[in-house]
Length: 105
Image 1 (cartoon, rainbow, N blue to C red):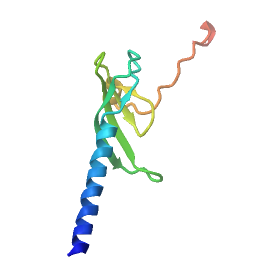
Image 2: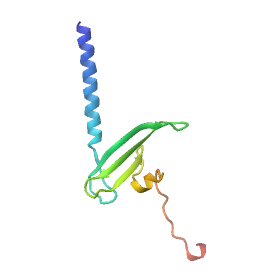
Image 3: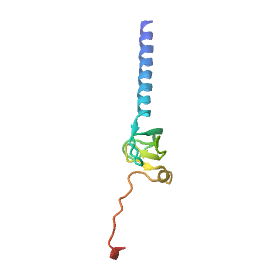
């Protein structure tokens, strides 16, 4: 009888710790690249839905700024990508533009 109580207590304690950790992650605020305010909130998270040939699964998350309303997508802990580009399939950092002299255009 006491073993059952201990097991049930451990399971309930583990579940409570998991819920508390997820609530903390969901309420963490990032700095918005559009307005600079620390009001970027995690809207949704898809955990490890695609396995690359090697390495860890890829997590995708969507974020929205409470201050300016800008939306961004993110892969794992990579850079934030504007929602419009994210919906069109952009992932990771955008290449930086380099101005070429007129002769090379």
